[in-house]
Amino acid sequence: MTSAPFLGTIISTPETPNTNEFDFVIKSAKASKGQFVQVSTPDGPMLGSISEIMRANRYFERAESVADYTHSGSLSANFPVDEWEYMIAKVSVHGLLSDNKLSRSSIPAKCGEPVHAAEDSQLKAFINIDEKSGLDIGTLRHHSLQIKLNLSKLFGKHLAILAMSGSGKSYLAGVLMEELLDRKSEHGRLAVIAIDNHGEYAGFKDSSYRDRVNVIDGMKIKIGLRHLSASRLAEWSRMSGTAMRTLDIHFNSLKKQAKEKGEPFSLDELIDSINKDEKLDKKENVRGPLISALYELSNMRLISRADTISADLIKPGTLSVLDLSAIDDLRKKQMIVAYYANKFFKQRKKGNIPPFLMLVEEAHNFCPEKMERSSALSRPIINTIAREGRKFGASLCLISQRPVQLSTTALSQCSTNIILRVTNPFDVKHIGESCEGIDSNSLRAITTLRVGEALILGEAVGAPIFVNVRKRHSKSTDRGKSLDDIAIEFEQKNKVKEEEIEAFL
Image 1: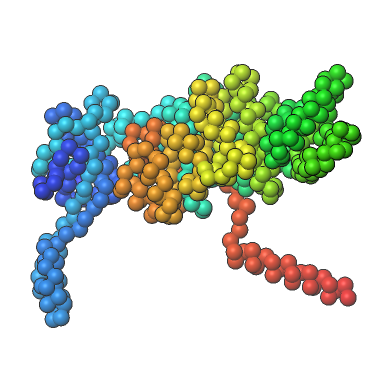
Image 2: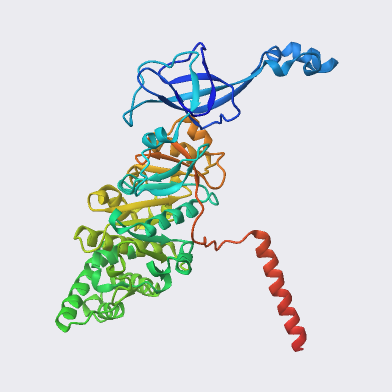
């Protein structure tokens, strides 16, 4: 016998019970859609979740009768309709729980059996809760169970957070960062690198985590020219093959001279070397476009003599935020991500830096699906980490509000997905096709999720679950303002200016 709340009794319908579903008449107001339930069987408790709830009343089954009584009053005034009203819950069966392991059910539940709410002890085994060192995401919807997920199962094979704008995806990412920063060394700690497109994580520097956080201003990020190659410069500049061969000659010559002098060369010296090349006097169709491409790189103010971000920043239990919010040029952002993601991955493969989680905000901008390689500079390295990272302890967390535009190569490698509210039909369809384990009921539910509610599915959990995301310990930094606040602020500033001018005159 179980002490869990009684919810109702299994009934027989033309289709159920079967090994995948059963229906029960609800006898308790505590039954809710999405709730986990249990039924006793000779082989152990059968676990399932309520996928839908229907209300029925025999008095309202015949349309002509309802129409007749509506003209003369109402059915409720003439008949005891409330006594004939009932609700039926449809349950999706997950399996039988035995020795904390879930096995497939081969025999349907028995009609007339009582249905109870699932107990926390059963759900812990079913969902793979890691009580000792799991990351606390929040509580299971309709239950009081804390969802603490195993680090390796959540990030080992990458994570994708998918949601429309304003649904709380960055807030959830902040919760995950807090869990990683609070993690004890004996449980295994990761270094966290956040590609912050809108400055949403800079607030960690003003929180209780400040001593474990480094925020790097995107405008001050530089890439050392000596760490690049001629082919990389050509790729970033979109130059022709002839121009690239000329660049290669001058680049390698300056690199050799710099090695002899012990001093790195600059982009200006490379441009000067090409300008002085007399052999190109008769090849202005080569020199001109090449110099123009290099000046374009120079004007970005990104390439310098040395890197500004050292691998020494990447330490266990720390957060390094690359704040790119002040950069408008998407190409420049992609160059930064392409270079430093490649650098950190190489350092990780050599064992020079600890295992890390690279969190990429607006991932569809850095790893787009339908875009030429020349316009998606950071896509190759993100796809590479997605395919190979788990072997070396390099994990990705891809955050996107447009999953349909995100690389299917990268998304398919994310074995766990956390989905918040999504309403765009193309994105919903794409999620249904690319996320394993999501059923039609869960897919429909994500369009109605409220802020702070999330669907988790994949390797980190035993079955798709809906979670209420916990409150953050640190203050969330939201640089966006409501439209009315922006309008009020503008008028107030103008009013102050007018008063100052009037006072001056």
